[in-house]
Length: 215
Ligand code: AP5
Image (cartoon, rainbow, N blue to C red; front, top):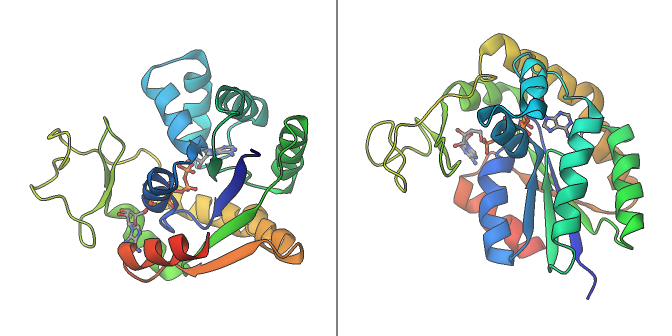
């Protein structure tokens, strides 16, 4: 059976990572989150990670050849799986051309794009109060999605961390880049009738329920 391909798109802080993990588990999809995979390389101080870090810390795109390498490996390793959920890729129209080429190679195509819509005004609050478990990567928010014990992961029991790119000046840069080059992808997929729009300003559970009911 052909694997289904879903893409999550939305501004930084829209809740893509929060939703992606739950959707992938519930639907038994392979999750390919370029941000998480790049951060894993940064933590392990791989050659790729050391190059990627200098871009990520400024909120800039990591060179595409590095990202492409990670994605292709992940697709190849999971070809017999039910579906793939992409979070963070493609990020502009040229990355989408590359995705099409990769999918063609494996006789696959994009099924639907899940667009999580959140207004800019909510983003700064979401990202400056975000905390992440360095081990299991679970995402928390210190107001809306608090850990049970102050600043400690509910599952791993270890201290949560703040991402290096969650500084106000870097957030501004990431948001501007999103509007300039990533959002046009929503318009592109809209023309193909592939966009599922979700209001990302409801509670995480409501957003999850809505997405699951639509895919
Ligand atoms: P990436 O990790 O993909 O970052 P992003 O797209 O900026 O998105 P975020 O991870 O910041 O936000 P999110 O939407 O996942 O929100 P979250 O669920 O955490 O990429 C990081 C960097 O890697 C890039 O800047 C770039 O350098 C590089 N990179 C990645 N992909 C690349 C590519 N393809 N090409 C080149 N470079 C690439 O939620 C945010 C907060 O809000 C959390 O605290 C959460 O608890 C809270 N929250 C979530 N949902 C809700 C809700 N419904 N209500 C209230 N709070 C909520």
